[in-house]
Length: 141
Image (cartoon, rainbow, N blue to C red):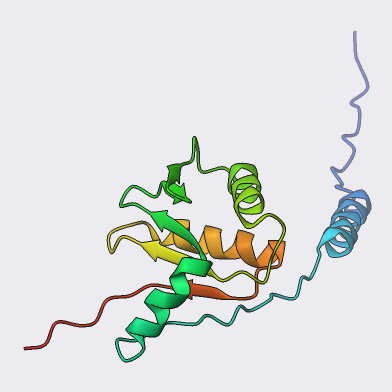
């Protein structure tokens, strides 16, 4: 028996569907990207010169203490966790809706920087306009 040899078809890769998919992905990512303008907070950093004034003013302000592990104490009471919702509700309850009250942030020198930034971001988003960060004077010598 003699069989006729079949001609092998040339292998051809059609790139048109690939280009279409890549183009659609490009359009999807361009449309779904959001460009948000970052807001900047102006912080009032106290100095040793007006430390007396800051101490007298602290009676009327809300104080948030951040320990070296990044946990928050607001109004002398420790929060159960460091979630955003917990911080927002604690700040709102303590301020009683008065966003013009100064907010004083006292952080341990070894506390995570993210904890301080998170608190300032939440307070700024809520509408607090007067945010103070306590410092201590440098040791002379």
